[in-house]
Length: 133
Image 1 (tube, rainbow, N blue to C red):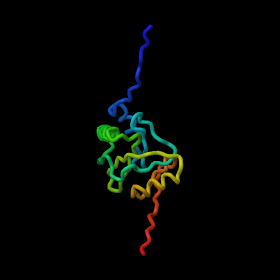
Image 2 (image 1 turned 180 degrees about the horizontal axis):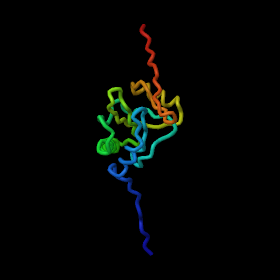
Image 3 (image 1 turned 45 degrees about the horizontal axis):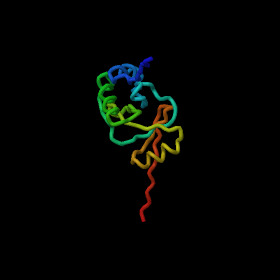
Image 4 (image 1 turned 60 degrees about the vertical axis):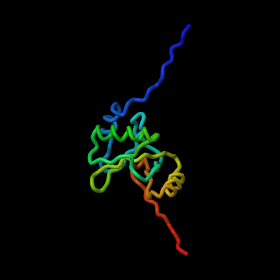
């Protein structure tokens, strides 16, 4: 008897962009799974690369679709959407951890100055202390 094989294909960025767009906060950052569009609500996220994968002036479905496609292309599992002081948005590929210390250590190694607390939806800034001899 033949068995049918089914594969689970991730929804396209076009399919999940409306879900993400409806949940983006203009005041606080938001972290999403780039394959499912589900919002991450706990843990700590830190930037894999301090340069955003994409930037936009607005959080439209079109802009989110582009950012998701770029994040997937780069192999990211999660993306943070970060509001900037000039009202633009940065789309940053991030990794997640449940341990605050791990987020701090990873943040130091990338040269980034803050990591994201997904529970409070706020950024925590860390200081880079350098001593000169």
